Length: 178
Image 1: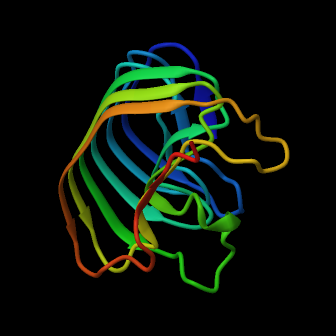
Image 2: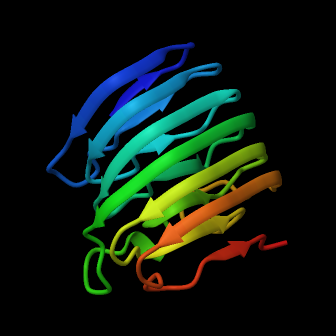
Image 3: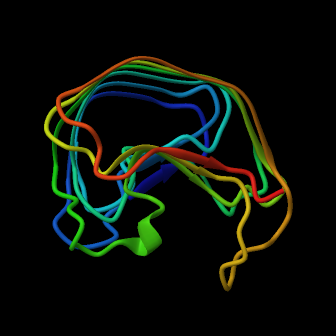
């Protein structure tokens, strides 16, 4: 996992990881990611900051992670992201593999906002080959050990033009735990 807290342009990068919890990348506010190929064993792109643009991405999704992670117990507001032209060319997640409580193996996932928020995010033009574990898994608040219990919110998240070969293994969900 590489983390860049400032603005950066990531272009024409290949990320490969073999061990569990080999995350992809976290980029800072105002960053752009283009022409990315990733095969990592956890979350691929973490969208924890504002004004992030991601375009032309190819992902070989492996457990236990999401292609795009919106939050993971982070009390931060992320406003404005555009993620487009994404090809999930394969998913290694199956019903019998390590499940991380079945909450992060989605194409788009969020876990425990802890007072933070996600707003004005657009996900469009996704193609998913084969069977994804889950398309969307948004869990605003939970009581897992080590997780704070602050409320959070989402507003204006749009999913447009998702093409999938096979129905996902489990249904998508939005859990507010209000």
